Image 1 (cartoon, rainbow, N blue to C red):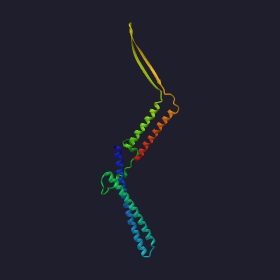
Image 2 (image 1 turned 30 degrees about the vertical axis):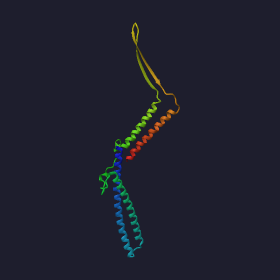
Image 3 (image 1 turned 90 degrees about the vertical axis):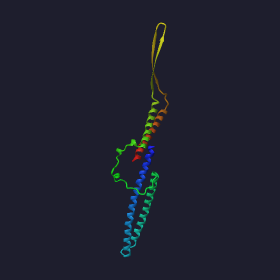
Image 4 (image 1 turned 90 degrees about the horizontal axis):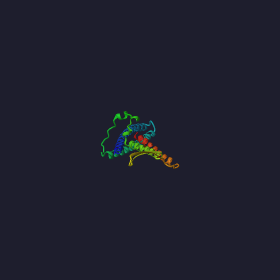
Length: 207
């Protein structure tokens, strides 16, 4: 449940930042178009006055057309991000507020990230610990085991009664199985390495 909430929150924040980014790009593109239109008007005046050729005028028109095409791409990307935000929040926003200025002034140090509070990292860490237990369990299956058994028996005769104390030490060792033992241990260790890499990947996904 926590992982789902975290994923939705991350996607919502990403959509919000994408809208803000493309809005800034649209504003910059519109300013560039306005500047290029001024250049075009100046080039047209100079061409009409015979001060230069019409090539400057044509070049300005080409730049304006290219920037308008770029603006349309930015607007389409922003519309897509707005649609995704509406799906995630259930609200169609009229306007998007600019991101807080403090957001860019607070770099996050890798040392300050609390990975233990991130569900994906916790899940990967649990798998790593389970794999580590699997390695230890596999190795332990082929170790000799010692056990002690004790007993106390009471004997009764016509003359007297007495106790017989017994203590037995048992040693059990598995039979030699060729390379099967090392193969099973290597398989468990391989799974452990995979789970450890998944932990590191989960941490990288947070960044």
